Image 1 (tube, rainbow, N blue to C red):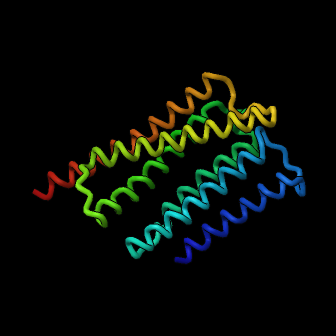
Image 2: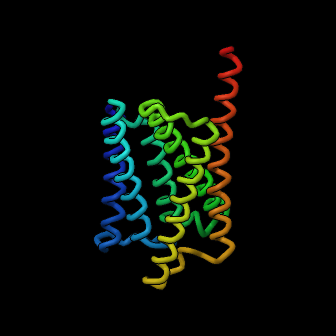
Image 3: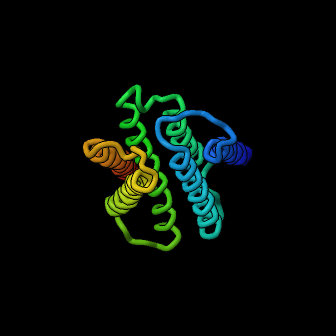
Length: 196
């Protein structure tokens, strides 16, 4: 439980830092925009809080602290990439973040769907849960790209990048999701085979 509160404090510290830069109390320069970082951090934190409340209500248990930690690492990785100009220095940094961010989102969605299957006696097979997680993670990745587009449109920035960058981002999101789903399905298959 203490880990969960420490991670929440880390999220609040990151949000405070991003917010202070956004309203120009601090003046750190980044590759893209403070608004984009702030929105991403806020959406992830609120999403985790809502998921925790959902699981507490239906399962009597909170979202495990390790999932919170993975989500924070992804948000912090995005912020550090912007703050330390790793995005402009290394093209692969963006690809790694899209791959791993989507993998984390898919893992979180799988946990939620497995919890719902147990709680509500869903009769969905594992591959369908994986497909639902892929759809959910793909939706979140598309929403992220749309947020970049809208930010560029209204603020005349270049967060979205060029056309190939967007396609590459969506591709890496899909590969990250499919990797987690593959690991999930393989582990379930092995478990079934060894339990026979």
